[in-house]
Image (cartoon, rainbow, N blue to C red; front, side):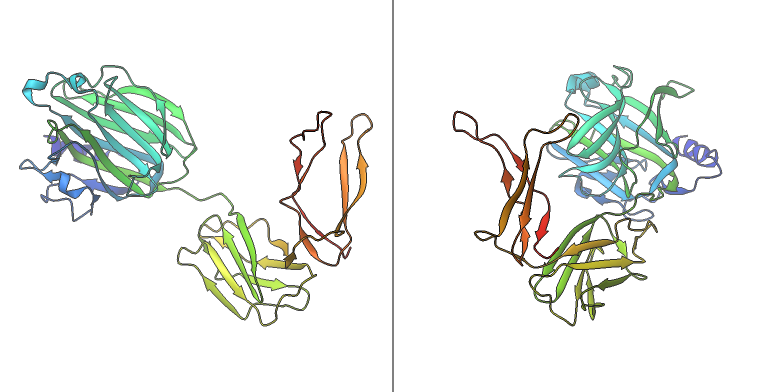
Length: 381
């Protein structure tokens, strides 16, 4: 009967969706169609073709499969928790729970991940939706307390998300004919998904107590609408520039050009993750000059163009005595204006003053916190 219900769910989905994950484990394994990866030794497909926990000791175990469903998406899963008869109810083991990780940026979550997950059980015995950023977890839908307090617990979980980030969380006990709405929320902090997963946390006595089945995930891949950032720009003397970006980039239509007779690079080296590029030029960079690099045609893999396309760089030198002069100090500033300090680079060197802090001395001889300089000064103006 459970297997038939999974087919009903699949064919009743909206026409804009397409199945990204559909697994009822009828093939007797979790290594084919689709392939799951993770704590594989702590899972098994049992004789009734259900994915079941199989941990011999206390653990937190998970399995993941590829899934980019995120916009106009729906996640369905049947679950069961059945503790040993001597254990009483689920709430007896408040440290035991299971999770359905509907969206994750990676398949190994041991050090954290970015995504969303449904948590069933734990201290409040509820069904709740959580957001996770790294290792930080935030409950964004707080389901009904004691909803999962039963032994055995048999339940269907459903989550929907539209393209604006509106989530709805539903649950349905085996004794119920309709889904119950646990809550809704709007959350757009996490912007995409790469994996879907299941997880359980058990004690030594409950290692075989968790069951998953009839997993159906539908929806569209998130559309990347965020422009990439140019995060780092360094000069590797004598003739190389290194550029780093906030995400993987499409360099196929990009051009790079440097003024002051440097020109275009003679060779390029793109990193394996496509987030950085090394540019090598035919001419060496010289001290005392500011060079401007201009980029055209560079975008991320989603086609979002780089917004900042021009930056300056040069070979900085150590600040010497007399290189920097206090040109003007404004202490008694007019109303609605700012105090300021003007310094002048009297040398012919390119000076990096980003590490300097300008401050004043108190009457007791101690120094105020001060303000850090944040720009480079050049003597040729």
